[in-house]
Length: 69
Image 1 (spheres, helix red, strand yellow):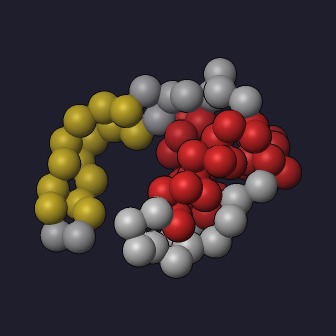
Image 2 (cartoon, one colour):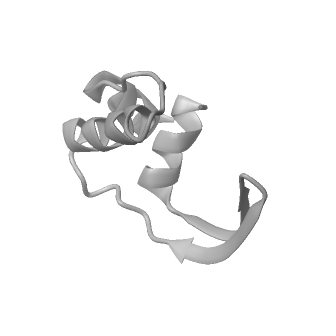
């Protein structure tokens, strides 16, 4: 539920060991920085709010701010 970290993982990609809900993953997710801010915002908001999740809405401005850091 760390919005900036989730957005950064999409923009910059992830590699190496990652544990989610006690399950270990070790793979590569390439950077997706070529995707538009609004599209990334919609994807993250969907994941945060689908399947019974109650996470926050992410805006294109949130993604734009993350790109600058």
